[in-house]
Image 1 (cartoon, rainbow, N blue to C red):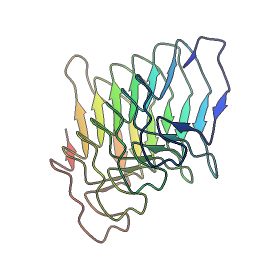
Image 2 (spheres, helix red, strand yellow):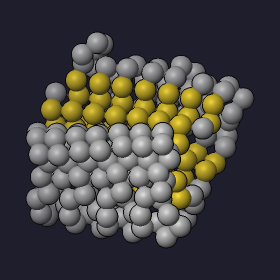
Image 3 (cartoon, one colour):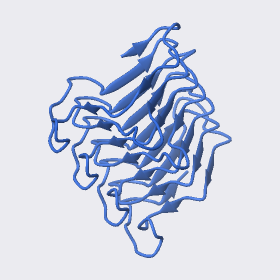
Amino acid sequence: LLTGTLTNANTLRSNLIGVNAAGSGPLPNGGDGIRIAGGASENMIGGAGSGQNVISGNGKNGVEINGPSTSHNQVEGNSIGTDLSGAKALPNGADGVLVTSQCDNTTVGAHGAANLISGNKTAGVHVLSGPTATVISSNLIGLNQAGTTALPNGAQGVLVQDASGVVIDGCMVSGNKLDGVRLIGIGAPVMNCTVMLCYVGTNAAGKAAVPNGGAGISL
């Protein structure tokens, strides 16, 4: 748990969170694998290169980022919902990554630091209830590490609900149980979102079908 307005600029790298020492089976935490809340800012979960965390098998979300003034946090280069090899699902009990409750400027993945977000019980990435300026970039969502076959999240690959200004860029969103990407406003508008340069419903090479169970993109 990273919480409080004085919890800033920390880095979590090369950890096994919710899995055994081999990274091959679950040893779950009862709640979230990692939770950032209460105004904690500018923290890095993972990173490019050898910074991979395996965040899998936990009772709730793999990573939850929550709350007003919680800002500029990054989740990059991790395996979330899979084993260390990225070939087998070790589901977190809810979303792979949940970004919620008016936090701002959260980044999930980056060019050269993609997350593998697959095998989770509900959505791969869920942006919920008012976060602003969330960027979801370059991730494999619903595929294995090789990008060749499905390792489905149990609901949508990416679910944007009651949040605006979300950018989904350069992701591979395939093989999920429901829609690849869903944007839905229930209690608040969903506006000014961008989905670009993504492969939705194919393998990583874009040459073979790995269909999502629902729509590719649902508005």
